[in-house]
Length: 215
Image (tube, rainbow, N blue to C red; front, top):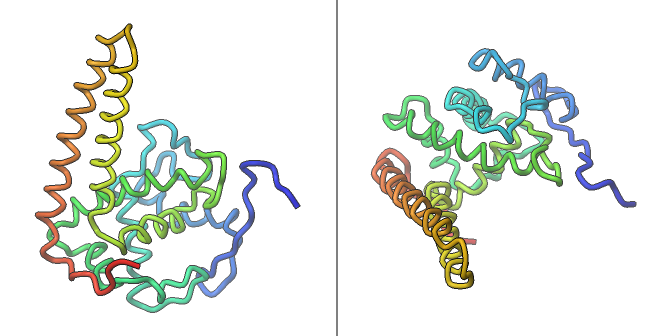
């Protein structure tokens, strides 16, 4: 049976010993965990994440991370089985609110949430319904492969943009000035992305090395 593009298929998760519809739990979760740290526009189910000013904040990332960390530390059973997460000790160290690099980690985690919201309502295929917990789990799934994932993603995207602009410059005979301007902007973005990766690499000292590397 086919479904209309963008239709959200309901999923249930276990929270506080009850099975809860994800459609319903988005608002409930946000009211419980997001609203105290982000009182305005706190409901992710209706928040316009296409607008940059509505990007997830470090405070929101911290609140979501604390829920996941609590589940990991207490071995709480959820339908998203956290017990199967690879490199869990590294993830716990990353989410640790007492980490000396906690502000940097949470800014980065907020960016990761922004990236993975593409699996929610802002794209045609809606998997998470903007649920903060599931959005975070997608981000952490990438980070179990390498804690540098999102900083490397910024570098890769900037390099890809530069490559495509260069192709455009070579292929076009008009508007070259416009494309050279975009090239300069992209090169600056790449510089910032590489600096961000360097910052990440300098802040790995309190995160255990990965137990599982590769597939």
